[in-house]
Image (tube, rainbow, N blue to C red):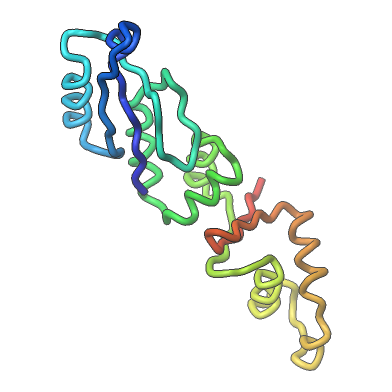
Amino acid sequence: MLINVYIANLAKYNEGKLVGRWVTLPMERHELKQCIRDVLGKDEEYAIHDYESPFAIGEYEDVFAINDDMEILNRYDDRLVAALCEFLGNRDEVIQALQAGEFIVYYDIDDLADVAEQMVEEGLFGHVPPSVIPYLDYGKIARDLQHDGWYLSRQLRIAVRLQS
């Protein structure tokens, strides 16, 4: 997963001049330092004035910390990261959940009824005789899954449940 941040020279901005540059993260630390030097020149402070990311980024956040976080997030599936960002909204919580392995995920689903059906097929509700399967109401099971903390991203076609 790549994100973009617009790094602006804060001194120039305060003078009414727009001096800055879009940077794609993650990147090598020395390259990021050079990008910031290029933007700042002899000035000392930068700010993040815009971003393209699945999580919020503050104007005065440390871009090196964001870069480090992106290196961690890139170890995981992009869709899973994006869904967790959508669900949790906070990249620190996303990283914590990913590193702890505190989640269950189903890919390529359209709704929680698809998850319910896959769970039955996998035997997660115990053995269900084949003669009973046609009578199961996956919609009702899906409602229970939603109440049990399952999150669905229709856009990403992924369902996630955080385990606590």
